[in-house]
Amino acid sequence: MSWMNDRISAMSQGARIVAACALMGIGAAGGASAAQLARPVIEMAPTAPTRVASLVEGADLVAVKGRVAEIYGDKAVIDDGTGRVLVGLGPDNIGVVTKDSTIRVQGRFDNGELHSSYLTLSDGKVLAVGPHGPRGPHAPPPPHHGPGDPERGAPPPCLVAPASTSPSPPAIQDKEAR
Image (tube, rainbow, N blue to C red; front, side, top):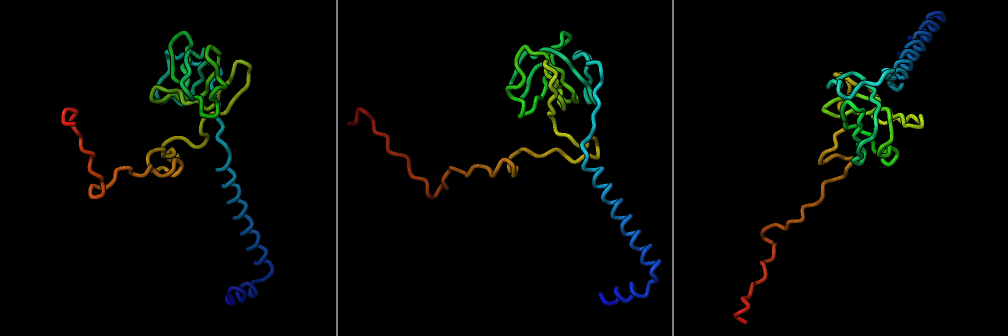
């Protein structure tokens, strides 16, 4: 470290000021980049709702407005008169949406389901639903929720005893032999 102190001491005051400004500029650029990545993704929904009958797989962003025909846990079936579509409501919105209510859903239609980002209830209240963040080919993969997922905990222990320690079954006696 003393060699670095010697080099800095050998620099003129003007060169030290230029070096300090360069380091501050690099820090500011890095901070601005980090802030840009941390901001939420802004999604703009189409102003006119799309008819369910004309939904296209993999479409960028759609809005659907219709009546809640059925509810299955955190999913609902929306009927807009032209067709029905399964909509993911999100686990935080169970019980918020009721059957026969009218809602507007903004999201992405893929694999036969409308993956909602926002719900607008009949009273005008807007609820954020889906995972927000980068999407597309360069986005990180979605979280894994299968066996061995740390969020779900370890799989249950095996309840079958090894063959060498299993007890033999009890003897079956014939009723006539008694």
